[in-house]
Length: 381
Ligand SMILES: Nc1ncnc2c1ncn2[C@@H]1O[C@H](COP(=O)(O)OP(=O)(O)OP(=O)(O)O)[C@@H](O)[C@H]1O
Ligand SMILES: [Mg+2]
Image (cartoon, rainbow, N blue to C red; front, side):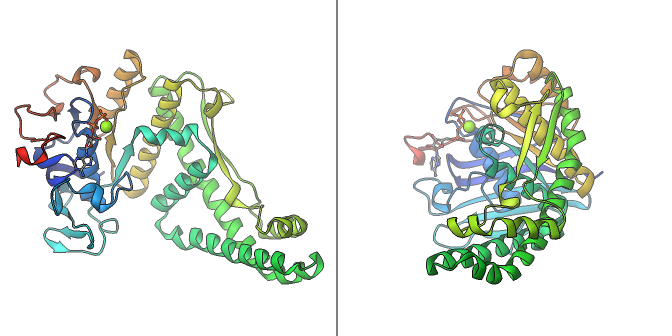
């Protein structure tokens, strides 16, 4: 199992950072500092360097430090075949400049040597707390990672849906009667049904693939009861059945002007002892469920891609009791590289151990990381 890890991260003029240069060990590194000090920003920079993207969907303007014209991040990555430097230059109004070992590349995501990253951000809690749309796209994202060739399958479905909806809306606008509409819809029903059935199968297989790992991680994290991930498809895996179901709903679809049957209404149910965690879980239980989901997925990705994802865990300890914190740290430490942010290092049991790295981003703290203060960003330049 190759475990690429970041050994160094250099940041210039991104977010709060005028300049930061940190070394990272292959295991756990605790990033500590008060609110607003730049902990999440540091994780964001690590992610940006290795993917070319911000995990907060930030614009280039947002990313570049206020008062600077351009920003840059470079990560030295220890891969199975030696070290490589992944870097990203951010120039608002211009394209991001992506490089591997100094050579320009079109994308980092496709680069074979890039480290995989699994990210926990507090706002990902909407995955367990929020509506089904996010879980669908999360499941599709996972499908894309586990089966990179599934891109056409996912796009094919959305394209077929878009075209059928466009037709429905035009039929509706023209006041077409159901009989005539059914004739015009028939070929689109077929196309959509084929794509829908294939996507449903792929989603079911993806959900099934992560189920055991998620369950195992939940138990390790001390989530009492059985955590169950269940794919809840809205349509069949047999194209003929989907065609029939679409045909049955022609009148309703025509009435609304869009398709209301199919995988675009699927959900992924997360239950603990049979009860939906979304509705019945406590804060800590929801957090543990999300962690179990992300860690279980990371396990499956590791197995499928032959590469262990680096964990970026932002503000993961809050809402967890001492026992769950200790369990989480134990799980993280036996996995590989992880960057964990906390407001107090003492929130991480074992933070003082010599194998655990520490980065203090407290403004003015004496260490390799220099952090610009919010009020006078130029002062530290
Ligand atoms: N482009 C930018 N230029 C300068 N400062 C920025 C920029 N973007 C964000 N910031 C500042 O970064 C700070 C937030 O940093 P960050 O989110 O990393 O904090 P944090 O240490 O994670 O805090 P918390 O503990 O509250 O999560 C805010 O004060 C924000 O104003
Ligand atoms: Mg933060």
